[in-house]
Image 1 (tube, rainbow, N blue to C red):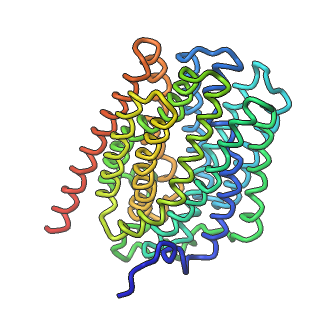
Image 2: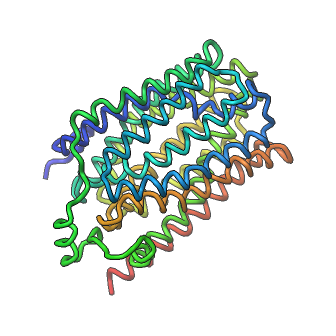
Image 3: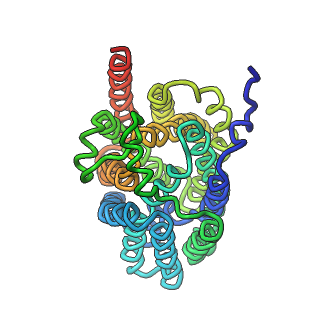
Length: 411
């Protein structure tokens, strides 16, 4: 049997996946605001680390009502209209921020933008699952993830420059990119929500994606293992969020506001570049491995990267840490959604893509607040040690889940 080349895994995928990948590249190039939000709050608006952490936690919590609203709408009226309306409203919020840059009203508008982000995501994830099947899903999800990072390899690099030179364009650029990324989706991707006939036929099979009657709670109870998986992911997301919260504060403290912001942008650009280069290689080598094992391996790379961050003091050391946690990110990102999608009933795809990220997002939610408190009370080094321990707990749960699933399959 001929062995896959690095890029052959992306051949023969559904046309809509290629369109979604293009849209994701455009959107990724314009990700300016969120990576620099902690720095913006602390250096431009005078927030302390603890206050910025509390704000980030509140912002993350607003994702929850938005996600519930968006998922219910996406499962009822369709994925595409909800995704497009939510992202367009988010883009308009960022455009408004550009006009009032430096104002104390900025955080309030950002909160509204992140509410619309919550509305958008479940519809986008459900659409991505609808247009794939288990046989091409991992490669398809991998391509979209790679596309995000292809754009992200450029976005934060530009964002670091805009942060110091033209902060109003930090917001305008983000909003414009989000609007432009909707154009290929609007023109080239049809609505993907499964029909009532498709869902009814699926109930007579044994697929893990078969439709379920009843509400969200009933459907979740038919998939208990996926709930355990989501709990394990909270420990991953807690640690991963510290890269967005703690790392810019670390570079700022080591090298000053201007140089620190630019260095942080370069680290994020390296993150995107490593994903672009390493993603097809890692997916080619691991695509036939159990996704739970791949997620666990990713956690180990995360833990190594965070332990090294606790002692990193010079740019080269920070770049090396980035390499480790980025490899972990690739293992995690290319297998997490693949595992979830293959175990989600088609009748509840958007709602599962709302409730599961909410469970997993508990880590995201409390990470900035806890991270800010740890930094203020102790030091940034203790934050990274704690993040490594958090990932270790998640890895332990994932391995227990793997052995439980294997015993179930054997019986």
